[in-house]
Image 1: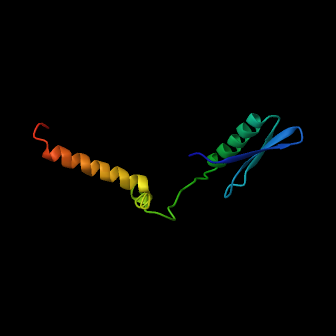
Image 2: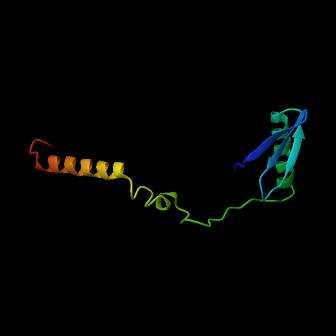
Length: 98
């Protein structure tokens, strides 16, 4: 699992922060070190038995079904569908095909 991490300069150091619900922070002399220290913090929590689960709030949980209707009002998709239909009709009427 990947978590978004905010890395911010703090004077001559850097602070890496995991976003809510974790609210973990770690500092380092460089941005890379701060992120590495934050990763150690996450591993420490995991070794204490913490787990992370995901639930689906919106959508079906199936990414293929969730995209239905995305292109509903897109003229380019309508144009594409017309072109496919024209091609299929031309293939159906052409005796030399297959």
